[in-house]
Length: 326
Figure 1 (cartoon, rainbow, N blue to C red):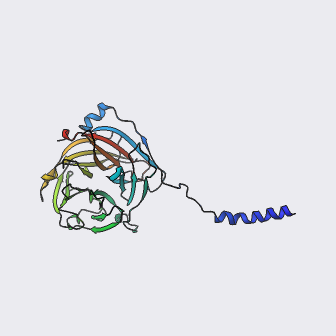
Figure 2: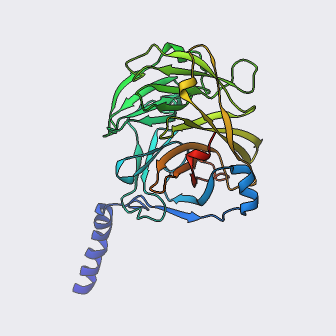
Figure 3: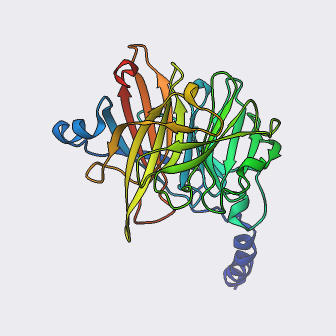
């Protein structure tokens, strides 16, 4: 009888004990991994990539809903890479082959508004102190963010006010001399190669009086990101949708000298690489450049998977000798 009573008491207490036990999420911490993808044969890659040498390609994986849709890429001090998504998320990680134990993901303090336009970061740039500037396409605005990811200033320059709802500042770069350049994704009028652009003499959140000019790029392609070479020239990553469902893309890399930008004028650039659909590509939207000890440059590309199971987050590592670029 005593055993029966004890068993009944134990059974009665089990729901209370179980109910008070913390319910842990399925994944206790962020996990990031990279799987290498096969490189294309040299005879296929060389005619398309020109002076660029494709060294490694990976697909990124993570078991979290906060991962993906990256539209900008920065190389931070200490070797950390920072990818920013068009839904206001961020990913801090290290180059594949290094430990990802301290990689982390999260949301930038942009807005609690459910409207995606309030978080639609499509471009980013930084200075040598770690300050970051974000280009928000949905609002045609530029935000300044400190190294602790705190938004300090916001601005909507008048020169960008007519850049459209979904075709705004897709590329943004702080030049070595402190000026800023931003490029619009959408085309000018009925053209298929002209894009509005703006040059600011300093921080666009403080110097709002930008000077307009026009980017003349490859027909059918829109700028998605850009980065400055050590010698001052700009590499601009461009993208074109070539098939809607499932989405298939092509890309271009062009080069231009910002010293040739003239207010009200047309800035012509030169194509230096073709990212064709028979290469391991996706919706490339981020580019970053790092110098190497051998004099070459490492060029990183990252793709935006649009949170789609039919697309991938792909990371390219290329190298190039800047002397071989026009």
